[in-house]
Amino acid sequence: MSADERAVIGRDFATADWAAEAGPCGINSGVLVQTVADPAETPDLLDIAAAEPGTVGVVGWVAFEGEPANALDALLDHPHAQWLVGVRDLTDARAADGFLITPAASHAVAAVGQRSLTLDLLVRERHLPAVAVAAYAHPGTRMVIDHLAKPDLDVLPAGEWTALMRPAAHAPNVAVKFSGFATQVRELKSAGAQVRDYLDAALTLFGPDRVMFGSDWPVCTVGAPYPEVVAAVEDAVGRLADGEREAFWWGTASDWYRLDAGGRR
Image 1: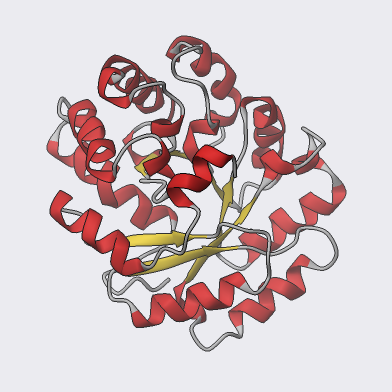
Image 2: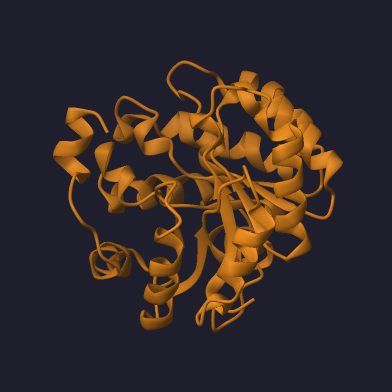
């Protein structure tokens, strides 16, 4: 983290902190997503999910190098494994833009799908060609691109983002998480037009059954408070039909992470 980021989020956060922010916004359930490439984190998150009624799933982490299948099986043997709905690769931290199409990554991507888990991908625009290739190579693995691939909304027009994202969007096993934008604009309160343009572009590319809300909390608070993030999204989705809004806020995530009312796969 940078010094500015550490000043805002350089501390411990608990699910109770999230509930205090989310509840007044009308949000009462969510999925915990991994933060660090540490095998000890996912078991901790599974324990939290089992104890916290607002947590309906966990997207954990395993190393894609080595024996990812064994690591996944170890997580699935955890006493609270029913809460494991996916794993995430921190692709943006890797030196190779094409890592997802290397033999090591291919083995891991296949192993995730074979265990009915969803693969979250923390990627940047430069990784999108490899995402598309990996998606077509592994049609049985459901993939979710986090944070719209982290574009700078102040610099990259939604139309140019569409062109970069289109090859991945053509793969039916790829969805996108509408999240992360609070830290990708200079001032969220004045970025309503950009947020709306990006949401329209995402819905045009993927359709409402492959676009889902993500708060990116607590990282989002570096850019804007949680209520402002939700308000910006509510303004953008206000023009959608009731069913499309339901899909955006909950239904699509429920389908892609195979959640049910109890948060179990």
